[in-house]
Length: 321
Length: 158
Image 1 (cartoon, each protein chain N blue to C red):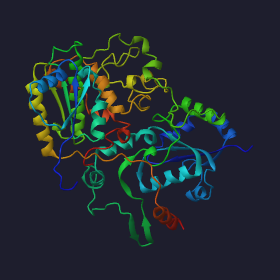
Image 2 (image 1 turned 30 degrees about the vertical axis):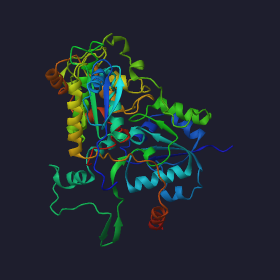
Image 3 (image 1 turned 60 degrees about the vertical axis):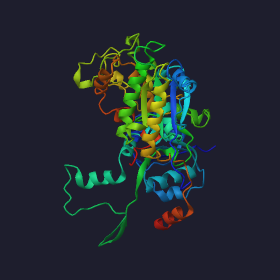
Image 4 (image 1 turned 180 degrees about the vertical axis):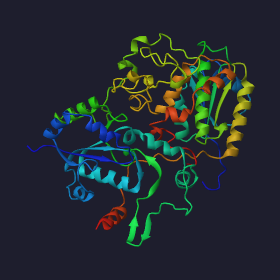
């Protein structure tokens, strides 16, 4: 039997997901021994035409990271779907919109204006603005269209599985590859990670207070962080209780509160709404004016609770954006 | 549809012990109020997950009204305080996303305040009538790229 054919592709992403594959270290040799990598533009010299030339469903598995913001990314997402049997949304951006998803707080026009005209570091005397078609002395050149908003992969094409995380933890990638090779994949639509909260596998679990009560949230620079004790118990905004496990607390081990990149467990529909609910409920303030003051200690609540998941939320984007 | 006047749709979550009882009293007292409100009874305002509010708005509500017991009167000691903190935080976030303040409203209404239910519902209905329908952007669903787009992309390649 021939080896399974595997593809990787990146859309609107930072390259961290590609890095996560490299972080397999020596295990990548086992992967290469077990599968044929037929498309991986970040690491190997394949072109779009190579994929076009494939038969439909020729790739057994394709891992796609990054959200969809441009017309080119949309086209590539469709191409990957067409050419692969199993399509896996790899990482927070393709899973929930990720960091690029926060673009949905703003309108397309305001993003372009800020980038090309208004930001303090921009000097654009000629008023240059990106055009889809530009005539140059060497001929006409084209750019993909910057679409109205950011979409998750499953808002563009049908997705089979999700590998969460920013980037997905090596252990989850290895387990997913194992499941694919042994043909032991769970039902379609499953997020390939444990379906419980991060606190469950956090090394600080034992020091979690019996009754979690917080008078005011602190930011990491405002306190000296105890490197043994529960971060939330110390008043830091640690999103562990509302975030899916699987990373083994790689951030919390390093004194960094969880920022929620793995998204919610399967019982939650809207990560941000559920997160705000949990954190509002453990605050101790009762009187209306005290509540306002304490909520002021949650700086940028939308950016905190929807950091990775705005396009997959029930709002999808800001009104008027 | 075009010429019909806009009738706001309001989803109300009322707690079993105070506000829902109050709305019964409104009826028993024959106090008429705007029929725009659809009441959902929950055991406590502390049961109201912010996801419920978003889901109501997503599925076509123009506003969401939440009614609970007055501070200190919660049947479960402090459910209404949790509700207060959650809704205040949710409203801050929704305001930043461009939602008008009047579309989500929290009111404490005791079992004896049938007249307050009438007043709040009527007032909110009018406020939302003035704001007009809530138009959330539809959530995108997977679609086939139309033949033309693909043909165009193919032609560009060639």
